Image 1 (spheres, one colour):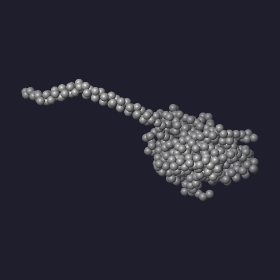
Image 2 (cartoon, rainbow, N blue to C red):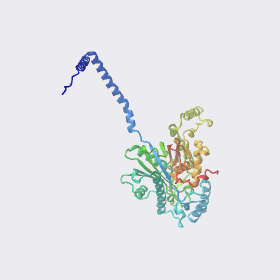
Image 3 (spheres, rainbow, N blue to C red):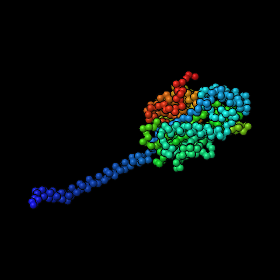
Length: 471
């Protein structure tokens, strides 16, 4: 067997190399250089770590985006349509109304902006026509379950995947609660978080979405929130002769909406919109605003919601206060500069009528607006304050005509109008604005994540070709 030969030259080169680096490392200049480099490297790494701390803190603590997966609006069956003839027939059967009250309601109805195809609660079509508790429960169940069924079918979200339920109803607080109705009907999981909001008035739809968004942003263990927005027309029916209370009989109609919002970023590709900002202001410290819409008893003990003549003024004044806070958060710089200049000019001119601060042009901030459809006068007041054209207020006016004042769900019927018309495009911004008793003003700012489309359950599906119409 041959023995392996040792490469003497390679061994010599390796030995000399080792000897060289040993001498180099032992020399003072090189060692000092190495220590200086090591110290600088540690300083650099330490500074980098401190510089990156705010980045990591922001990444791990930033609010998660809130997305609107989809929504559904309840559309009652055709036999619940409340034309003028149906409404007049019902109130004439009611012997508790004085002739003067009947004439007053007739005039309010004709001036309200409501059309012939709004929907009334079940008791209106019954022979006895009494707004009893069982009728209120029927109204609630029909609207809530219909809207949720349609919503779950569209989003393909299983009931067991719902982590939060927020239900808002201005005046109906049964026992068990409305959220318990939903938990029982859909067999939701036992650790689902439920919230019931009441007494919020027509702004409660906006408030409920804002509340659900705050829950989703604050919790990492919750992903899907179901928001249900309804009202009880049955329990708000008034049988007395107080004119401020009779107005509610004329303008409020049946409506309900359900929405699924999530903080799951993986659902962004199928979500309709992202909630980018919200604002709620409360003006109840002012007595006039506090009592502008107020539930109380009349002289005969009949309970009703009094809508005073001061309501329109209150809405206008408090809307101005609201947009003073909202404007800097949403308006482009050019509009803010113009507004600031007008304020200074008005101050210099000592408040002359010709030099009042200019109203910012909010159409520069939003492509679309869902304005509170509380009534014809309310829409006109908002248009006057914000200097809006008929084109901008069209969805509000048409929604009032087709569905009436559906209270807290009204902004979602407007949203459905935009979708039925296919007006919203990806990247567009939408402003939802609603008023409520107390007196409250609420805003939601959305960004469209995809072009709007007309779902098969859109409440405008069978009639959108008739709108807009000329008054």
